[in-house]
Image (tube, rainbow, N blue to C red):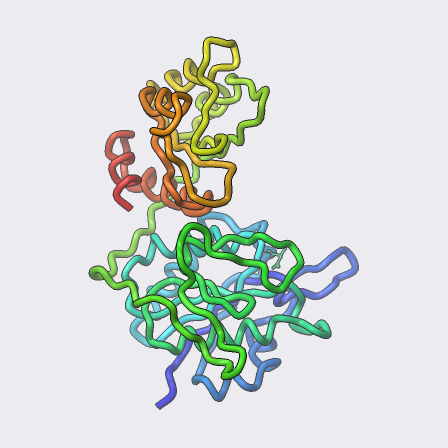
Length: 326
Ligand code: ASP
């Protein structure tokens, strides 16, 4: 018996048409599926039109809506495919990965660089890969794109137009489509470390401060005073945070933020190999003032982890523990 897959459509380029003022989602889930008749060879399916958004308009409350839609149907279907705009798909992938950790069914996000009804589109191929992954029986949250399958929390969009738009950052891909057979060759074992405990509480008071030479420490005060509870410092290299005796040292404002219960996490502007705060004095000092390391996680994953930790814990120490242990 073929697997039964639920297709949840949320918009994005894949469903877009040019409405005269730029691309805008306009095709519904049924129209997308009808455009790829080969899907019927892979599985049986039903669909839900959950959202119809350009993913730039997709917010943390939508992550929750998607997670709830999956959870409500988890007993009925063997897997899920979610069509989604590519621009924030890595954020949704990371969020669902942490919200639905240990989900026993495959949850696979996909989208495309060209709309389904445009000549030469990558939409049909991406849908086929995603449905194949969803029918694989391998539980977990994935993103299928450009002939590759990624874990939800390590994928990142690196290209705005190329069909091979996503890459896995600081971790292996989950699988790759064999160009001869058209089948996914899985490159890692299924990740099942316990039972699913859905996490649906998110606090979106998280900001990212990207440092440039000349950044005013006042920005950190402004974010703290504006009520942000988690701030990701996108620092230099291995985790360099300005910390000498000059007026541009961030440390006094790090102290200000930390004393008000803000969780500060250091990320890096380097794409690969992560943060190593212990390597340079500029990192060690930041750490001594309470800045946590974001390690090798992507900005997307750190954002989701911080929002979840803050959503689950009222006070900073408890939220920090949750953030670190994810
Ligand atoms: N702007 C679109 C979106 O993210 C881009 C895409 O889907 O490729 O919704």
